[in-house]
Image 1 (cartoon, rainbow, N blue to C red):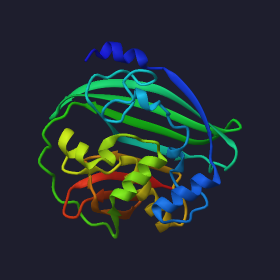
Image 2: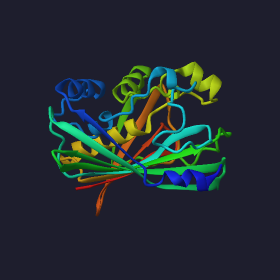
Image 3: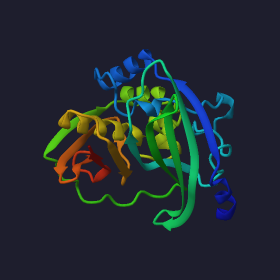
Image 4: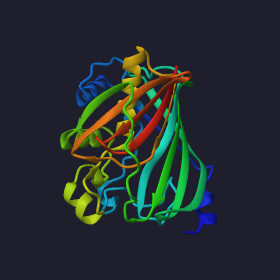
Length: 267
C-alpha cells in the first residue's frame, strides 16, 4: 500500500445534486415502519453515487479509483461518522452536496494493514447549510474474526429490532448500495466468510438516531457514531439508550453479544 500515493487524493472534491421527494420520504418511512414528516438521516439516501452496473466489482462495489483513492485492500467498510443538523432538508427543493477528502491514514491492526479515509460532506439548499457530515471509511483485507468482546450492557431503554432479509434489502435499495454482503447470503457466507449477511452501519445509526429522537421528542442537533464490531442477520438485535449529562449514549448489540455500534446524541 503506497500511502504517499493515496494521500494525493486529500483535497479532492466532488459536487452532486438531488431532490428530496415525497415518494422518497414515504419509502423511507415504510422501510422503518414510521410516519415522520422530517425523517432523521434521510439525507443518507440523497446525492448518491450511481456507477453503471458494468463498472461494479464482484462484491457489488464500484471499482476503485475516481473520487475515492484506489486503496488496494479488499474490504471497504463504514467505520463511523458524525452529523451536525443545522436545519431540516426541505422537500422538492434542490439539494447540493459538496464532498471533500480531508485525510488518508494507515496503521496496522490485529487483522493486518488498515487504511482510513475521512470524507466531509456539506449539504445545502439555496446556499443555506442543512447538514454537515464526517464519513470515516476503513479498508482492510479479509482476516479471521477476533474473539467477541464482553456482552453489552442493557440500556435504561432497550428496543428489539428484527433485522430481516427484507429490511436489509430495502435499506440497500434506499441507499442504492449494491454491496452484496448486505443482501446476498450465499455471497456473504461463502465468498467473504461472514457468518451471515452484514447489517448496514448507516442503518444501525439511523435506528439509534430515531430512538434518540423518540425519547427526547426532538431530533438531535449533533449525532456521532462509531462501529466497534459487526452485526449479522437475518436475526434480531437490540437498540439501547441511556441519558448522560451531555445528552444521550446509545448502542446496538446482538442478544448476548458485544457492543456493535456506539453513538452519542446532543440537543
